Amino acid sequence: MAHVHPHSSGGSGPGSEQRLWIALAMTVAFLVVEVVASIVTGSLALLSDAGHMATDVAGLGIALLAIRIGRQPADLRRSFGYRRLEILAAGINAAGLFLVATYVLIEAVGRLLTPTPVDSTGMLIVGALGLAVNAVAMRLLYAGQRASINVRGAYLEVWADFLGSVAVLLAAALIGVTGATWIDPAVAILIALWILPRGWSLLKSVLHVLLEGTPEGIDPAQVERTILSVRGVRRVHDLHLWSVTTGVPLLSAHVELDKLDGWDATLQALRDAILESHSIDHVTLQPELVTYCQTKHSPVKCSRE
Image (cartoon, rainbow, N blue to C red):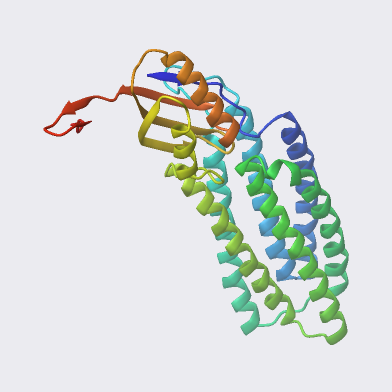
């Protein structure tokens, strides 16, 4: 059996970590401002946005923790190290999104039934500030979110917060013009309904990795064709494709050959073809010799037990 184990970073490099730290500092500072403002203005929309901002803080903190711990080297008990912590952290982020959305929906219904006064001017100021903070945080996280599911989770939360700030601004303007305080809980409901699909999308990605599903962007049929295109390979079976974390796809398979002579060269050709066509550099291949049985008319491949 042949193994190729050049572990990659999974997309959580120093650049991503630095951007996460900056985004975390900005988010914590604004969270304090928004909580105070929600109490002063009596705005549920601000409170719901602050609740979601709290999950941003938790998500960014967990993302940073996962990156730091994920750098711990592999050992005899954990042959892949701690990189899957990134996936678990993203799962916690998704759970936080669901909890915040549920709380906001329940509170908003109560506010609709029993309207409360709202300071629209304070909402307007804080909403504008939140828009600026979230825009900068999104810009910081945009590059890293394509390479890391953990950074992607943080990015999605900040993105949802950005839209939440837009909603707060619109609600503040409408309340200021019309005096209709029911707009505040109505906007809070819209923010919550926006959060839920984001959480579901992230949760699906997390479950796909934990269930060892085929990594996104990799077609098993295409991988099989790539393996069969290498000279000397007759058949491939028990082909498995999965990932430890984002950006770390793995492949294992049994390949049947006419002869085992020259397996080293065949293995190298397989490694090169798989890496070039599918960007998979962690490959485990087991060679098997194709044997034939003589029948009355002609030799045929023996059935394998």
